[in-house]
Amino acid sequence: MELIFVFVAFLVVSLSQLILRNTYSKYKEIEINSNLTGKEVAQRILKANGLDDIDIVEISGELSDNFNNSKRRVSLSSDIYHGRSIASCAVAAHECGHAVQYKVGYVPIKIRNILVPFVNIGNTLGYIVIAISLAASLTKLFTIGLILISFALIFQLVTLPCEFDASRRANKMLLEMGLVTDDEHDGTKAMLKAAAFTYVAGLMSSILQVLRLVYIFSGRNRD
Image (tube, rainbow, N blue to C red; front, top):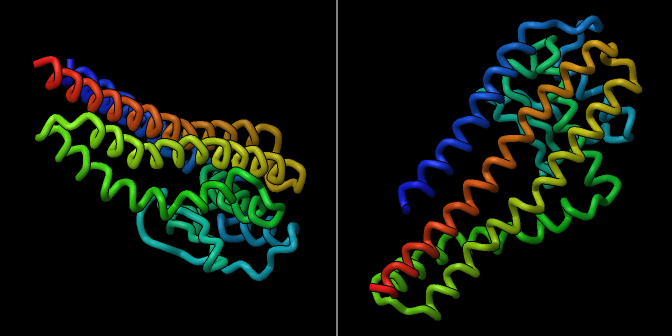
């Protein structure tokens, strides 16, 4: 039974990554009519939202794109930064969507930031506490360990609306600002939907991991 949890978690995450890679491979080959690079798309969206103070930088890796509010920086991977494709347009707009969330005071992203230190502490101590509780069959200690690692679950749960909302904002801005055509808009939606599924898969995987730990502890107590 324990292996089932591991296998299902691996399957869900692998499937989400496969869908994202295939979708990305498809849309990074389709150029947008505006011929704008990901950097230029980001510049236009940020300027339109009064966020000219945010830097746009190029980073290494593939789909390693992110927004850092404390540094006021949108970081785009090379293919997205220089790319003139539907994929580069969608990803760049998505990261700008996070910047807009901070500007308008989007509540879920505020909650996510508050949870960050608790997640870091919980992940470090949680599994140590659980390992000790499993070795000593201490129910109360196991419960404490679960509570600690549950901060990561809550963080992932709060992350979902943040990611979906950033994609919603991105798609809306791309269309309203005329950065993509109606046909291209279908592509940006497909790209961002595939990316969002990876966060859903990550949450599902974490839940399965917690259930696996509960199953292991329950089994040892029965023995």
